[in-house]
Each structure stands twice: as structure tokens, then as C-alpha cells.
Length: 580
Image 1 (tube, one colour):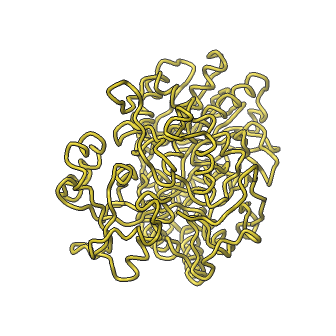
Image 2 (cartoon, helix red, strand yellow; image 1 turned 135 degrees about the horizontal axis):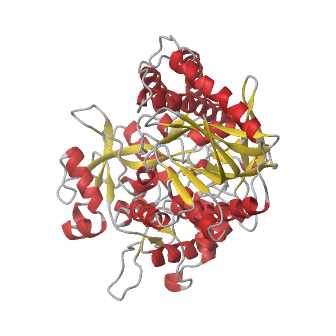
Image 3 (cartoon, rainbow, N blue to C red; image 1 turned 30 degrees about the vertical axis):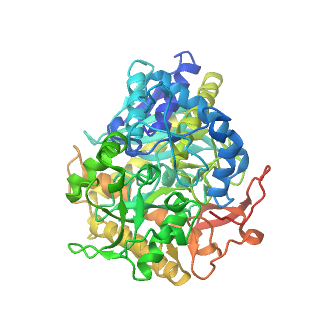
């Protein structure tokens, strides 16, 4: 097994990973060897699926906007669980990143006078979302990727599945990865490491996320002794296309789309009269599910799935073609629906995971409540800093990715320039051999369980019991089911015994990560006895700041997840009743 030494090892090639690589290379004047590892071709990272835009106050005072108002919107949207120092950092840094990307060539939509167009997004007081049609993530990622191709010091490893993370004596050592094209194992030893592997919404079946969103980096960090945070908070996007679950961007409502029930009524006036369809996502999702539960949904004839409608017809074909071209392409291709002439069937789907690796405002991964892992940083959806709290506002995620990508890229570069390897070559090779044997045992095993049936049952369990509205008995049923699936997974069978492009092995390894995270989500949700943001409990319908204004921290114990709590950072915005 080959061991390759790099100064910085970046796991993940989405916006956060690419921005980190760019910053590390520039900060070090290209003096460092940087490896960026992706289980896909880098340009297929899930960041390309981001449609609506990136938030930032480009011109304070214009239209009544301000940095402070962006912060207030974010904190209120988070149901006051966001750490306010992190939010203040995000809103101050976002305009710089948008302008940098503008200078790099991202084709933002512009007015006739050349100014950047802003669109409205849910929970934002006024329009402050910068966009490139409805393919914002694609244009941002392709711009960063094109730039990185000119950096010889940044080596991109496409289609390498990272198997395990090494932390020795509280210090990052490296990672073990499998070359998917050959099946060969490779050790990447690093002076510094960055995890930027995205979220874990694929533990659900009905989700807007890519099949690659399996939370690998989060699960690996957990197994290596790193803490996770706020894992119970999974965001359900209100408008996923039925039956596929493909995202219908919030920008469709930002451009003026209506949500209609079976009676043809704009029902959001009953739930958030001042914001209507542009209320925060948790509120809109709960409103849709309430309409369905009260018999005002529509049943799709071919699938039996219940939904409401998103109506864009009044926008007109020219607006849709200019501002929402991909939505039109998707609905025609997937459902045979032209949104300028017909309504779109939608319902909430798992979309974004507010929880992730416990990290501080500097992006350092934390072993327990506050102690950092030496040489390990986190960026993007894989980490919980926390700027989103219990509910993310749309278009803040892309800001988070590039801001903390820059922060951790610079920090990792500074660390690598001033430090040697924290783990010896002998130690990393001994560890790598043990981890590789685990994979070999899986390949050579004679189990009987089908990993695809286990995955299907896991996703059905989460869809049923850990959805928009939750209850204690449902969590208990879910926990029992997931524990049973974990036992079955121990007897899983990899049918494909070849080494080249063994997607059967890849899927089975990903499933192990997903089962681990599903168990943690349920455990954390079962413990939180309140409703806050995306965590809506039927038995506890109110937010409880006295007992639950705190972050859930979870560590791996000998008998499963071990939970503790840390306070939310409050700087200037005291929690208030959340009304829209």
C-alpha cells in the first residue's frame, strides 16, 4: 500500500473544499503540496446542485439593508440556536467572497446598468441574494475548479473514496482512501487536514440531495473521537418535486411563485401572513404538512403521493426562462410539466443538515466541548459552527461554504508551514494496514444481508418517523428499527468481488456511515423535549429557552452515542418569540 506525504490533505471537493485549496495555495505562495480528494469527479460534487443563490449585503444602506439586519434575519431564522459571534462573522465576510467570485468570473445576473441583481429569499427582510440564474452552485464551483487547474501544487484525486481518518495523540495524521477505479488503497499523510465532505441527508429516501451525500467525513470523524453537534436538526425543503424529490429552488417563490392547496388557496396566509411563501423553510414545511394532514392536499394518481402545488404560471414564460431556466428544464424532463402553463406538485424533502462536526469559529474540529484536534479543520455542511442553528435561511449555505473554506484553508496552510508531521510514517502505515484489513474482511465475508435492502429500510424509517413533525413513540420505533438494521449490517454481503469500479463495495461502506449517523440523529432528537426550528415535536409544541437554549454535543461511547450540551453564544440579540 502506497503512502503519500502532503502538507495539506483536503477531503471533499465541493465549494468549501475548493475554496480551502485555493486559499491555502495562495497564502503559502504555492510552497505547499496540497491533496484534494473526492469520491466523485470533483465537478460532480453536490455543490453543483445549489440553485438559488448566495447571500450578502453588497451595498449597506441601499434599499434599507444592513449587515446587522442580515445578522438579525439569520439569528431569528435559526430559532435563536445560532452562535451569534459566528453569524456576525458570516454576514461581515460574505460580501468579500461574493466580490472575489465576481472578479474570478462567476456570471451573476445583472441589471442593464451592470449592477448585480438581488432576489428575495425566505426569512430575509429584503432581497439580498446574489444569483446566476438557477444554477448558482454550478457556476461558483466551475469557476473555482477552473482556477485550481492552473495550480500545480494542488493535486486533485478524482474518484477516491476516503475510508478512515487518523487521529493519534489528539493530532491529525492522515487518511486512508481507496482508488475506486482500481480498488487499490492509498495512505495520505498530512501535516494538516480539512474535512469538507458535505451533509448526510441521504439517510432519508425522499431528499433533494445527491446519492453522494452520505455524511462520510462526519461519520469518520465521529469514529476517530471527534465530537458532533446538533445532529437532530435536519432541514426539510418545502418544495421538492413529486415523486422524484428533485429540488425546486426557493428562488421560484422568491420570484413570486405561490403555494396552493387542493382548494386553490394560498394557504401560507394562515401561517406567516407577513412573509407568505417566503417565510423560513421550517415554517413553510410545517404549513404544507399541516395542509396535507387536514385533508387539503392532492394525491398524485400515478404514485399515490400527497402534495400541494407550486404555481408559477402568473410569472410568465419570459421571467421563467430568464430567472428559472433549470426549473423549467427539470419539470418538463421529469414530469412533462411546463411551469408557465401547469402547476408543479411539491412536498417537503430532507435537504440540508444543520448538524455536523463540532467546530469553533476558527474552523478547528473539537474533540470534546472545546478542545481542538491539532491540525484538523472543517468547512461547509460537514461542520457545525453554528451559523444556522435550528433552521438555515436559504442562500446562507453558500456563504458559509466559501467563507469557512477560506478561513480553514489559510489556517491549515499556516499550520503546515510552521509544523512537521504529527504522526510518524510507521504509525500511519500500521494504522492504515488495520483499516485496510477491515475493508478486505468485508470483501471476503460470507454474510447474507443485502446492503441495498438495508438502505431502503433505513430511508423508509427516517422518512416515516423522523420527518417534519416528530413524536417520542415514533423516535422509539425508529431507534429500534435502526438498531436492528445495524445488527444486520454486521452480516452484510458484498456480491461484487472485483476490484475495479466496485460500486457495490462503495455503497456498502457508505451505508455503514449512514446507519451510524441515522442512529445519532434519532438519539439526539429523542432527547430534545421542545420544538425549535426544524425539530418540531408534537408533544412539546413550544420552544423552551429555559431548558433547551443549548447545543447538543455527541461523542462515541462504548455502548453508543453519549450526549452532553454546551450553551449558545449570545452577543446582542436576546431570544424573542418568532413571528412572521
